[in-house]
Length: 219
Image (cartoon, rainbow, N blue to C red):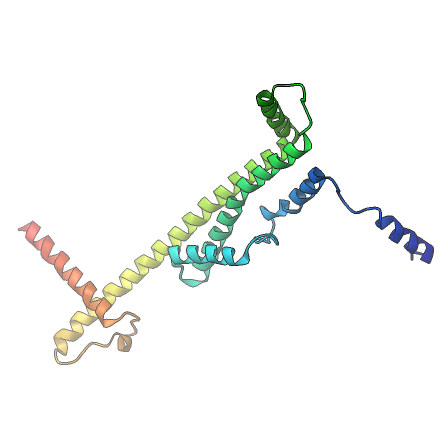
């Protein structure tokens, strides 16, 4: 256990450790703080707008119209991946901004136009690892987006096929019922169908029109 003297000494030393004080040092510290923003579980960083993020997710939900837990999870993953991808250009600009602050005093004897290019090259060389890491993370996120998009498309196509098959079954039941009970309105719910009567009647008309068209072409 620490003695009272050790605790007092630690507290005194802590007063002299206030973190980076220069502009470039503070910028570097800020960059380190957001590294997990591309790979961690937390999608929304403390500096980001929660309302803007929610609107972003809502746009994805509106576009893909997911049904069921699996589709909703994939749409959420797509929204989060895109949110992270949109962050990368800002991070790249931040890296260069840090470097320009850090190397602002270099090459004082060079022509100003040349000097700017030299500083940009110096920034790239100094922060090449960070810039390469951003590129790696961008490629990883793009692969994740492609994977999730393909999985979502497969789920939704399968669901659509199942829905159409069930709707066709409802049409067959509707046609049979109306022939046998011409004075009674068909109630889909009584036969276990979730479709409205209007949906079934529309599909029945499409099926009849398709059959007529095929017969006409055959003749």
